[in-house]
Image (cartoon, rainbow, N blue to C red; front, side):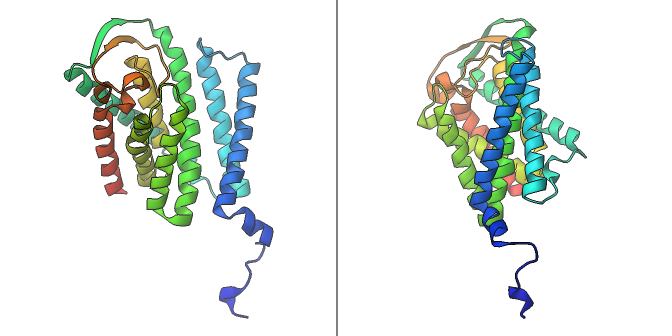
Length: 277
């Protein structure tokens, strides 16, 4: 028998069907939906609320459940070593991502402020940070697992890096269209600036930690420090701003993510990462 056409041992027809990329994605979505239900239930049991320091506990619980579900899916369904969430080197990559995310958003606000679109008119106590910390933990971990760890990685293995980059960025932008105050411009901005940038940093590191840190720090800095709406959702921050000017400059009610400065700065950074990748 020609060994090149011999059926691999242990890989039955059912196995090959379940591991076809689109079917794998469907199964992964089901697993993550189950993880979301479990995480929400656990947060309710411990009494985590979004308006107190328990928001951090609730966010951490959700993130932990998603990490466990992702590792379990990789090990027991995909039969692979989940190196993209390995702990060795995780702290350095996470810190790198946090620094990049905070730095990029500070640069965006700096440009908007220089052009007259952002002004600080007051401050608030530090306890306003509890909700945004919880939100940032959840969004950073869950969205990066879903969009980069699952969707991008599986599509890349099937159709290649460029197709995976375009499709994951488009999906990321489209998912934000359901947010409050979302517009087509806002969805396009998220796809171009964040979808490309986050996929690119995953391509460079081939791990999720830097992407998680960048995503979480971006959201925290935007809402928690500068008091700017996060993807259309009003958030209380340490600084109380007066935001004025055209939506192209400020991003309008959706937040600075939909602004021209964010698109230019983050897209340029994303392209630089792609060149490295």
